[in-house]
Amino acid sequence: MLVQQRTIKNQVSMSGVGLHTGSRCTMTFKPAPIDFGIRFRRVDLGGNPEIPAIVDFVIDVSRGTTIGIGEARVHTVEHVLAAIAGLQIDNILIDIDGIEPPIGDGSAMPYVDTLLSAEFVAQDAPKDYLVIDQTIQYHNEEKAVDIVALPTDDFRLTVLVDYNNPALGSQHTGLFDLEKEFIPEFASCRTFCFLHEVEMLHDQGLIKGGNLDNAIVIVDRDLKNEDLKSLGDRLGISESIMLGTNGMLNNKTLRFKNEPARHKLLDLIGDLALIGVPLKAQILAARPGHASNVEFAKKVRKLYQQKKIVKKYQYEKKQGIVFDIEALQRILPHRYPFLLVDKIIDFQLNEKIVGVKSVSINEPFFQGHFPGYPVMPGVLIVEGMAQAGGVLLLDGSDNQEGKLVLFMSMNNVKFRKQVVPGDQLVYEVTMVYRKPKLCQIAGKAYVDGQLVAEADMMATLIDRPGK
Image (tube, rainbow, N blue to C red; front, side, top):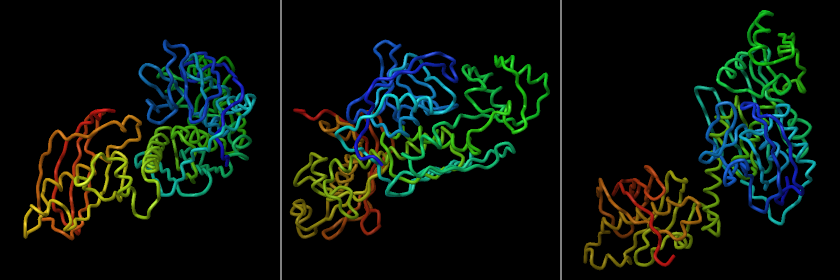
């Protein structure tokens, strides 16, 4: 796998018709600087809005992957992204003067050929690989979809498809060396659909740019000759249509015996590019589709953002610790005697955090609360939970550096048990909901597994004075 980031050397363009919209457009690939990522730019719209190819901006997955911001959107980006990711390009700007990339022959090869003609440039920065070090699972019971990421030191993909159709049957495929296998084994694999889907998609106003040269149509029902002629007229197909004997409309020859499974793997590569970084992982996918691919990509991107935050503040990796006290002092503005969290031992981005506070007789508040009978003030236990909640608000955005978290309300506050010197408080704080400047969290504090305090808290983020 490549070590340095990569972009293209020269600007290159291609034109054609979009699969679903039928609109003609020109797409121009341009070199981009280090850490730029992959971005689409709608040059036909006022202001030339840019849309990063990030899963956060996916707005539709019904018959392809569509990304958008506001009124600007780009449909069916998966084959373009598969070509870019398959060629291990990290940074590229894609100017497009329409709403959908050209479909070409229904595979990623037209984009691959165009990008190969641009040549590649190694950039002076390392690739930002996301190394999967834990199992990540996605399961959809209704659609019988399973996608799993397992730890490994390279990138591998295995895909299984099974549509209970005699013409298609059960198929599987695997990619084990991106650099050697992507172009000859997968880039040329075309999109496919069933005959009944063609009619349904046409009725929905889609596949306006579709024809028998840019998609494999799998026959899944019997039709008479007059029905076939009517279908051709309805879809605007000038060439004659026949059911064929190999299960494919017009006896289209497959480029590989398992071309549909290989195309599903191609789609998966494109959708996984929306994570925003290349992976070192083994991906196993059973019956994947764009909706499931995107949901899985969201889970993986969340892990990437979480790791990025931890790396930013925790300089030394320590067993069983996410943030030590030095990292907490980089995150929180609190200092002695009001820093009431010693370490963070679990951090799940925007979901949950677990912090620890060891309570010592040397705590300054024990001098007055109470002389001869030291009890930790309940309000400070709640404050400790609140500070852990402040760490939970980290989301990786740069503008958090100059923010303060102020609590607006506390409800359902209960103290169950006294906390005394020698106790170790464990704060468990979960995110209830979050908006840009407002959030609600629920906190619980435990000692030796026993609940000692709990509270529901609402907070707001304000600009820190002087920042």
